[in-house]
Length: 118
Image (cartoon, rainbow, N blue to C red):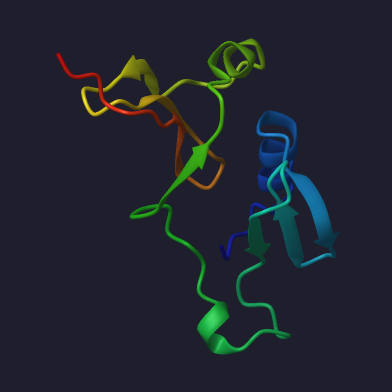
C-alpha cells in the first residue's frame, strides 16, 4: 500500500494486530503476520526510488483485508479500537467482526467454520 501514514500503519498493525516488523526505513515498511506466513508492505507515495507504477497514493476505498484468527474481539475492544461491524455469527458458518486501519482499509477478523445445518 502506498500511503503517507507509515507511522500510523506501523502502530496499528504492530500494537493492535500483533504484526512484526521485517524491515523498515524512512520510506518503506515491511510487516509480517504473527505466524510469519504473510507480509504487508507500506510505501511512501511519490518516492524517487520507486518506479511511477508504485508512486500513486492509495485513496482509502475499494480494498479490505481478511485475517483468519481466533476471535480476538474482547482484546481489540480493550485496546480502544473502534469496532465497525460488531461481532456476529453468519449463516454460512463464519464468526467475525470488522475494524478499520488508519488508511481506511476495512479489516475483517474471522474464524472460519462449517455452516450449521439442521
